[in-house]
Length: 265
Image (cartoon, rainbow, N blue to C red):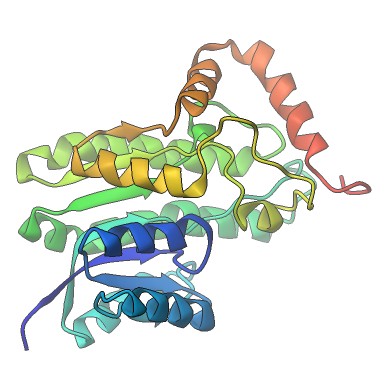
């Protein structure tokens, strides 16, 4: 059986993950889709196959447990697949004060946003080098500043950005393209999971989910180390990076508090 080179997309059952699958498939890539929800993954695979593309591999798996990356590798090997492109999109945030959110929920966020991403990157690095492929890690404009009210999430995305920029330099001689995609506040399932209620709206001018993913794909293929989609997001990222923290932190804390449902801490 010949080797099946795939673009492996994590968190592929909703939001940016779905758009990543559509964009990579439209560009001619064979796919492997990973998320917890089997039904949503199967529906997405059917949609892509219905457009005349090869039906993606579907692997229903929670990536947070320590053994999950190895299980994913074994599933791909059993299907005769190797990873040419890795899109580390799986992750989530929690809105609330650090002292008010359950410790186990916050450490689970670190497990998925940081540990699993790191483990998957290291595990599939030999494939990426062999195929001279690419690594796209989804960070956030939250990576550019501390975030009171979502402290662990912001910190986790700062880790993703730092790691990705370092790997871009390390892997450049091997011909592996490495990019960090830093979306702004895109309306996806993220807000519901984060506990922001139903009132969240994407600010005017902020790149949509599809525009965000298109920019991430183009940036990866061009070998851009950091991709911030859209001029509004670029302005937000620049402001977060350069405004003194003594000024920005109270504003960020107030903004996150407004996004919580009434009655929550």
